[in-house]
Length: 334
Image 1 (tube, rainbow, N blue to C red):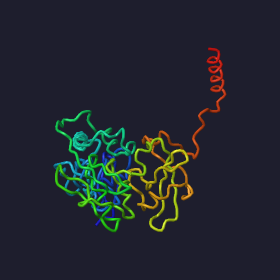
Image 2 (tube, one colour):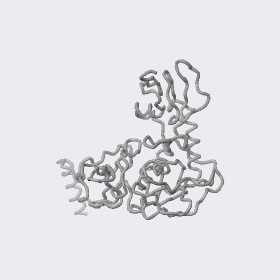
Image 3 (tube, rainbow, N blue to C red):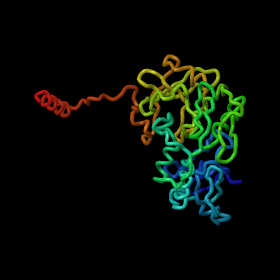
Image 4 (cartoon, rainbow, N blue to C red):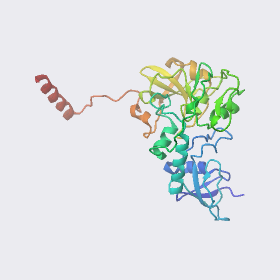
């Protein structure tokens, strides 16, 4: 078997290891050609293949079999082959199909953005902005669910859930027991515990980090602030349970939220324990490393400075100071 295989995505060729999926091959290239993904999570085995937002067109199967694949395929589940050619943003068929997928995801999703704690870092918001339609063709009532209690730390809003299964995989793979899952079928499917029960294992808070929408939120942060009014700072501590590497979210001098550090695709670099997430919200508990770099495309960056202190409001420019002085004197006379 060859050590590497060549795959071309939107005209850009990259060499990857055999068995690499189209999505991960695109991520090695980076930029706009990376398909969006709502259910795939590189650190969770078995994830992917559920939301269908990463659909791409394979216009050439391989060098040995150059026939195109007859239908669009999920890039997170389709492995590359040597000589494969893939179209993502260069295919009108893919763009049109992605609009339909977004419309389906938004059929039952409530318009909670003004009050949702996930607003500003919600992948569904980004997806709807980039690929959504202005209106929906759906004319029926949205589905509703009874409220379930998952404990004093995690808030479940099932009406916002898109059934990506990430939280189920987290409970399966990084906790010692899973007491929640997907109940029901079809339109009645929902995330819940079979007998209403609190989720209280050491790593349960990671369900919040992996949720791409606002279905699972932090009760200790609920309704406290908007993320674009906060300042994210990298910090660490000696933790016997996890790596202790986190992002602290400051409002003034107060730490109002603690999360795992996330990469450019919104995936946690390392999962953290509940003690780090919920019980250590004092600056004295942490060793501060410096401001967290936030992509300029994110709304969070609107109130973010790369230095520990905000830039001065009054800039030290003689011409500007002179102009301000004239304006002040004029206003005083009036």
